[in-house]
Image (cartoon, rainbow, N blue to C red; front, side, top):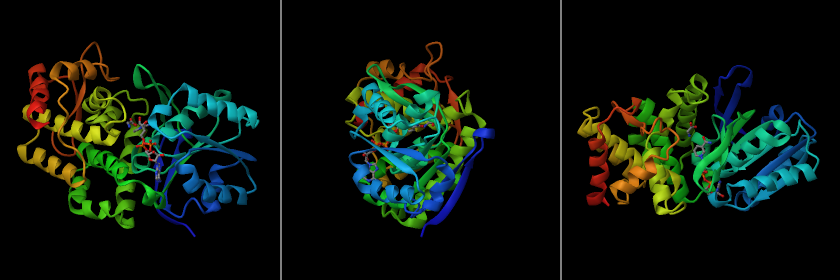
Length: 366
Ligand code: NAD
Ligand code: GLY
């Protein structure tokens, strides 16, 4: 039997959809049924997640009398590319999947982003359902319709905004997640407190040990609150005309760290963690954030087992890498800064010297 712990709706008119957060959801055909109105469905997974969770999902889908086409991809960010995308198209065509065939993304953000992009373009668009199995995917990448792949010249550079029909976040799947991956997801959880919700930030300060123990109630509260915040931001600004950019707190610094060290050295959330502290320090240099608030941010990231010291790539290299960010406009690096815990702003309105001061500081911190 499944337990639905929280339901969140992403309000986008005709393209609105539910996020179901609970336990035992994958083994309950009735939870899946409203999202699978077709004779055939295709599940896309990878060689780590598939062996763990495909058997239970297969049983539920087949209990509904639906034929399931199974597509297994190689694991890892390095496979988030054209070659792997084409493997999905090859398999869908070979199995004669048609315009009604929903694609089910069973896995973390890599599988979700690839599957979403495949769904956006296969036969000019087929339905898809996100079934995220990492903390990062449950609180961030499965919600909001950003899909895509990497290009050798940049991360997530090719893609589409394409919303799923629904998101099924089964918290049970988080039990098998390696600790380092779990902590990486916590960076995005902390992000929501920093950008929008001081009460949630304070709750995280109190409850981080429970989250690290993967306490079911604590996880349900955290995943639920993050999805509520993301749903509200996406509903207000689906295509990132303005507000949605605040979801990128710490990411401009973080992407520079990931690229500068070589993708895969630091996990995405680890780089975002150090990046959020850099953004907090720059906000403090602007007089927008108090020393105490920077200290609280540092303490919470440390408590979550995340890095807070950025690697010393050199100021010039950081500036070069940060200027490749998708938020750059007319050569200006726009950053997400904080005017208090829970209050993020998008700003290019900071002295260059203040940014350089923060980057110089990495030399002593690293
Ligand atoms: P990931 O998909 O690579 O998963 C991390 C690792 O955990 C992989 O090895 C995966 O196979 C494994 N795994 C997944 N679920 C598991 C489970 N339940 N038990 C054991 N192992 C499991 O990485 P991620 O952190 O989930 O996602 C990162 C990706 O998400 C990046 O490509 C990033 O660009 C993207 N992303 C997209 C958005 C968006 O809005 N679309 C937002 C944030 C990040
Ligand atoms: N992860 C950032 C966004 O969805 O906009």
